[in-house]
Length: 290
Image 1: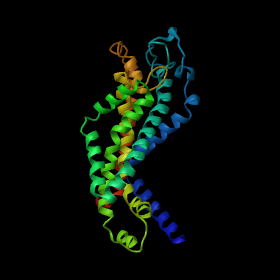
Image 2: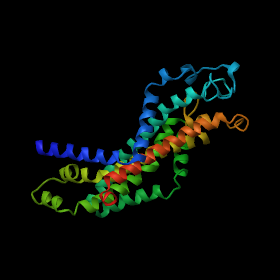
Image 3: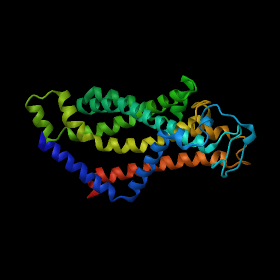
């Protein structure tokens, strides 16, 4: 047991060393830490925390960026910098929720399909193919519209439309790993299928899942913002970047800052998670690393 713990610590130390050698990975991680800091301490670091809820001040309506309003103000006189910072909370919540739901659905089904094979595999994969046959934004849009416009329904819609990708990824891993000698040895001495899956197959199948999930965090935030922009996602008074953009559609040509800063927040967040995903791929994939 002590030897396994020492080996795990050595491996983690080696992976951290590889990560420190990847400048883009470090940039992505740094941005994510800043986002987390903003989400946690938003009421402290923002000048007008009341503007994240129901604060209305028409005397400050559509003020351009300056010392008083760093990112300017919107049509209700609310500070855009404050709302962008508070929007970080909702965006990270969206990304985490979508990924957790997608993993909770996709990973077990992928393990079962790959390990059992046969008709079970055929049924699961055909169901996955049905979901994957739809364009990436069309299915979430249809599900969110059917469930009703809300940020919770938008998160469910995105997760339900994405979990088949995790089925395919984990199934491909299982099909390869279950033929390994150590799995055959465990089966030959009577180890149960459940124990083989949990102790041997799942831990050795996690690398591509971790990489995909890290990239999908950013795309989940982008997808939720798209649904909010269309009108089937977040609703006022929720502070969400996509909703901020759609609320400014009527006047953004004259007041550019009302959409520029929420849009930049989405761009930087998606970029950060993609940089981390690319870095994790370089770190965890031995073929690329070598």
